[in-house]
Length: 147
Image 1 (tube, one colour):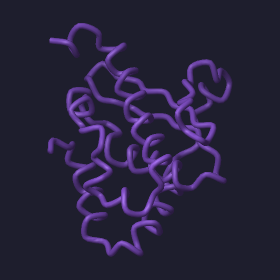
Image 2: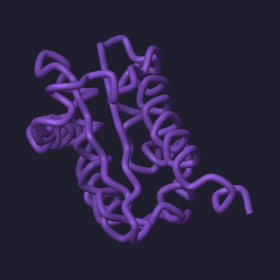
Image 3: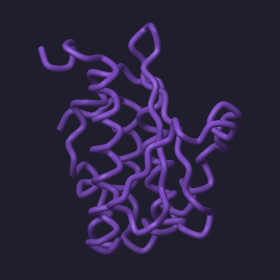
Image 4: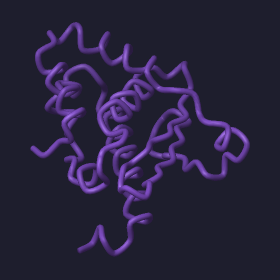
């Protein structure tokens, strides 16, 4: 499985954690989602809603001139599971090359053991978040992503 180094570290931590601690770890990652920058607070139209999530979840991605991916998430604090997944993605993918982000398997969370502690409905939402951010990256890098 091809994962950027930072995401691989997160996945390894979850793999080593006993099942009963995985939910606690996920909730810790919920606290790692930074507030939105002013540009998104002033103009929320730059954020895309992930409708497959039960929670009102919004995201934006930016690929900078060096090809590094930057992630921005907005999820209510009352939804710690999905917010925790956003925290995992932020920790594992922020600053990674766009090619590495596009190579992340859609179900990488299964390797973390999240499929044993999170409902299938939540897992579908998590997969949709990753799919949506990959779509945004593809739109930004255009033909490079297809070749």
